[in-house]
Image (cartoon, rainbow, N blue to C red; front, top):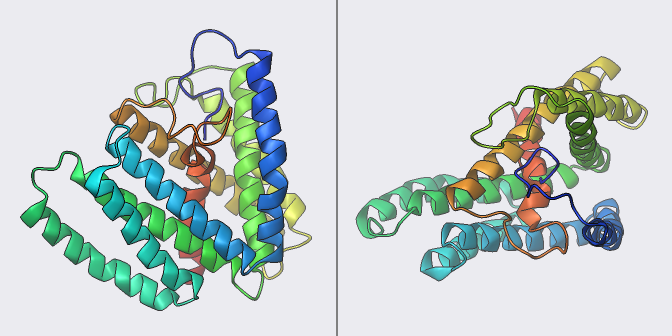
Length: 274
């Protein structure tokens, strides 16, 4: 997710840019939260559409603004897997992904040697599919899916906000300048503290977990969220792009907004499964 620690132009943002960002958040935030709150079929449709958009953005990035045959294959593959998830056939979806590992690798070696960056298309298929299925699985958990998905969302948001203000006010040593020149260790610590505070607040709503477990989990999840941010920054640098798309005014693309969430969803779902 783009924040003050991501590569930015030297000139400060204009007030009009900040106004556009704020209006976009105000307009998009409530419908998203409402869909998540009311659950299926609204949350299922939301996650399915987001996975479609993410596949389109990823394919466009890899094709350097041109979707091409590989981009369309990426979108079709993600849609195919996500349909099983929407109909809560998660075991079939996982088996499909497992079989796809063999099939895609084999086809890549046989037919797609001439396509540049094909490995990034393959990675996009697995990353988007697994993270989107994870979000579906978390929200549709009948025990505490609503509470967990809201906890994950607010932890990610708190991490971004805490990292923004800590990185801007304190500054200091950079984490990985070659990937994201403005991300600082102070920003990461600020994000972790914010995530811990939000997690402590959620103790009152999430059952079957101790307060310290939830606070520690939230703190660690802040690191995962920042790792997802780094991963997307690396992807954009690889293909020389500032944003994943221009879909959201003032924010860039959807992938720019949910990069940390995708990584956190995989970890949370994996932790609960295993």
